[in-house]
Length: 265
Image (cartoon, rainbow, N blue to C red; front, side, top):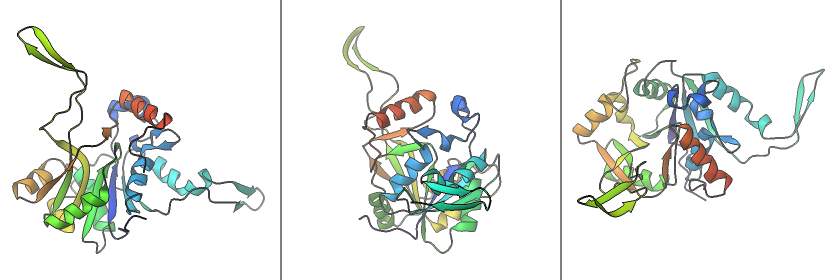
């Protein structure tokens, strides 16, 4: 069994409009786009839960009611039940899932930016916890969140970001003049790391945020945190993917349907 981190809330940004995935997000928010039989946010939460994190705060905005409806009806969607149409009573014959998560659905504004959403939700639901996690509602990884959290706690800085080096989308040609010496279809950026979107913070980071709708987590708050020497990087060389486009979604669905999904605990 993984160590329990029940005191650490995982804040998931679920409020964006997902404009680059318009085929899917016209009628539902991006975190509800399915991979297999479950929305991608379920896959993200399941990955955290596999490492002992079971308390989630979903920061809602665009079409947030769809996410509220999903979790309000979660047991019904995953169980057999009988409805007495006269009394409107419901009898559940079994609970056919093993999720023991605590899920808070927090409305954080229709057009608010990421930093504003986290600031609002943290003010209401962080409680007395010393640490919290932040991620987006569209990314998957096989990173060990317990290891990242222990790394975060050990270095004493306010924040930790998962640093990944995903393969590029385009093939790389290594040349000698006009002669191709080597063709690499999907080379990795060996020395360059990007923000993988899986963070841990100490509660003091909330002071870097603002509830102003224009506050963007990735701009002034994180830029200033790094300048102040308060941000560390946890290196991850395994699987990482972000569902930005229909092509990304198709790739993740293919991995899931073939039983080759690296993010599955």
